[in-house]
Length: 587
Image (cartoon, rainbow, N blue to C red; front, side, top):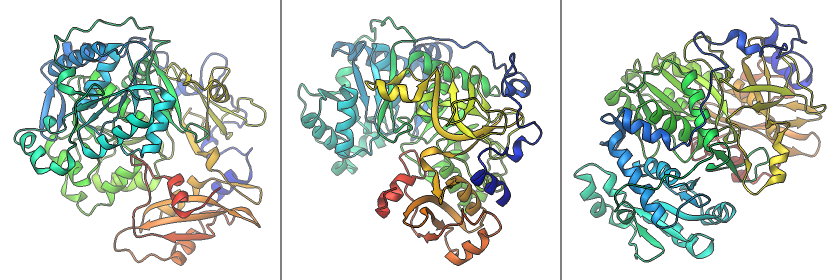
């Protein structure tokens, strides 16, 4: 690993070992065929046709095809596809009565609940645009996104912590009205009755007026909305906020065609899915683009049962494995790591899992190895995408060759090219450069930000800000984010390579590597590490361990051991940005 890492760090033009079977000058397109097409999984066509339809058709078709099957199990209460279809129609009709139509933005400020599914498709069927919001946003973040997206109406639940934020937003932003759904009503009997009593302090006391609308009033209609006329390629289904390649929050405009195509791309790729027979773990937050597409849209299209969790809790996930025997499990690396590191993991049978999709952040090789070793499941595969790609762009095959360290091959209809940052030329196999993506799932642009759009979409290609290379079989390997690159005395150090080496130590549970300003070296490498519970790990132990695994220029000058968990985003991804903010370090 040390030699490979050193080559990546010091010699940008040197081919990686993964490309050794091909000449350094092997092009990724030979004039008739992309390199990955030659090695595509059997039974899957890269040229498979993809539909462009209004996204709400997914719910309509699912209600007709899988009517009596369960779409969602939430804490023990379930809804069939037919029941959910009726509620979506009533929500759509109710929203139209209060003015929702094409061009109107409706925000979803919701933890995972059945209301998330109901209002997502209800807004789309009313003709509006969904704007997803993180319920953990502080007031400042909330107001900023409301004003930037021009959100008119917000949907939330009657938890005091959320309603207090909504009241602040009503006073200090462009927000006009809030629809409030009863959290307790989504629970099974008798919890639905006991919740408002037992959790009285947590439930908001709402003063109903023309700016606060009750859920019961929204669904009090005949369930016959007027179907909007949608142009799938032009009309925006979702405004999904992201830091993008610059770190400044922007609303990615995802059209109906973008999201419908990505749903189909993923389902064609994971061809082992049996319609109407699968069960998926819904622990990722549906306001996040990964869960929105993979957990919700793909599941509804395939008639899958979603075991919906309001938040990630390891004990609850293990109970779901035991009780519901799920076949599909999308999650972020931190969740797979938590499962594999738990002393209880050996008490559960994971043989039910057909495919575990890791996304949202790089999957360390040691986390993959540990998960497969502890669970006995060989189903964990890494994928890659961005908010701007709806999000899926590449996946390792569900059946076929899965390459450790790779994020897989481009999904049907998707082109991945590696461009030289200096010349803009497409690089051959094995050469590292910026990963660029073209395909039907690539966003229309950033909302009201034409300059930012022009910065990332050039000649039809989405410039991702990620550094990577393609091997001789068309598998994509990511090196790191361009913005996370650490430049030490002019040499490039990629945090991911250092993190991979640290994770090889058996006593490491979590780690983040980042660059810290240094007057002599420009930047220097620091690592923050959370040891496995009970381990007696020292900074010196780790330094010695790393000596033959990374080059001297990559060796951390400082390793900070922490007892508490490292900071994570709402989706459970380790957050370098938040860690540096905690430490008061500005790059």
